[in-house]
Length: 362
Length: 175
Image (cartoon, rainbow over all chains, first blue to last red; front, side, top):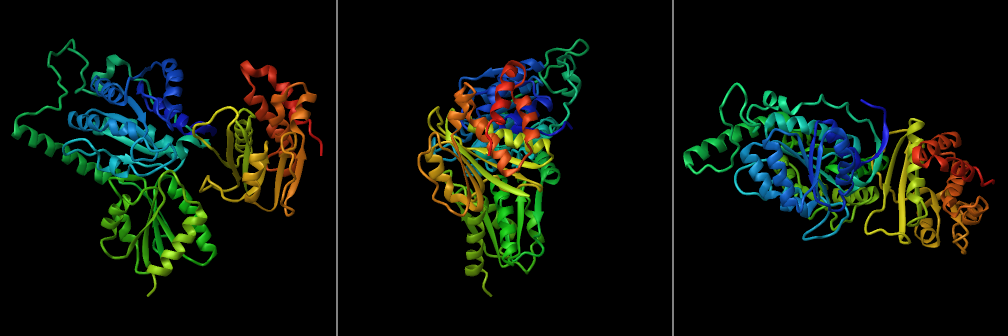
């Protein structure tokens, strides 16, 4: 770990990807993630990597498909409408089992929408818009440090599970500056050594064996395709067991439990302190992995709790997962802002109090 | 210690840099800090502001709705952020561009003709450093010597010839 430096979220995410071994970055400009391609265009070539500005997001993810299939460590980034264009590619990458780390600096929609922070891409991220049975692990950091750590780790995880990994940030995390200690770089992998690490990769014929690798997403035989999808789902089961991540704060004791991720979780933490000053015990469940969603964390909620609140920058998307976690044990209410509006900690505290009074009465 | 502040002006006045320098100084003093810029379709001459928090403890929300200090480089900034000040807060006004008095009587108001002071040093661009000097000396949120280190760090290499000018500007305002 290096000493702490002040870095903008976007630049810290880019640097963490390089330190995690990224040598291929394909990007297309979109606010609020533009500092990432800017940083990559400047720094990646100096570190032995390749930066290409793609002509569109569709092109960027398909470049990632190619470079990933050849065994390279790939990082691509965009923001909401750009990630929408990448959905088809995500399905192909999952089917072909090609590792890639994708980061969204989410803004608000629908449509071109606005450039302020949003979380209305929760369904886009966790359910996806590509075709077929596929899943993409999604991590949602709530600080620049956590974002940098997750990007760094995701480079390894994508290779381990041979699957894309999505990091879900937003305009606030991308644009803000915080002290961050960057992880030490992973050892360089020579292109001639890729075959050793990734025997499946398309590195060309080797000197000692002439077995041809293929990376495909087309399987026309139903028997073959069913077997392949079942194999993918064995992997997804394993991911659910190993990559579910959550932070909980004072859930066991809480009268009201707020569920929030990313930016909103930070603001909710301050709101919870404000509520405590007024004698109201509020707890927090902060999903760090959005898929796999930490349903088990909701089993910790006790009968002391009167209501569970899903606080999100959308008209209510994560709330569906919250309801699945709550399993009808408690009323679930939505605390929502959207369109790029962000609640203050005071607003979250006041609205939580009101919900508790209205829904929590015995 | 938990201090929340707005730095505001118009694009080109170096207000983001001033905010980042406070955050950088906080790190050198082993404090926690966040810097969040207003972002959007910004341009030179448009409005620009940032929020900076400095604390002894981990900072939850980087967004603020009440402040301990406001540094306003122009009139729209004063009008927008003066109401956010907590009683006892500090309001620094660049009176070169703000020709109205502050409304609040429950805060400390510092009137600084930053542009004229900067011109005394021969460069209008260091008005932000004049204000930053006043900010550091008045609030004590970070130490003056730490900020001088930050000035050396920021104006390094290609910009090294600007260190002396910025140090002078930083120390130019006297109470």
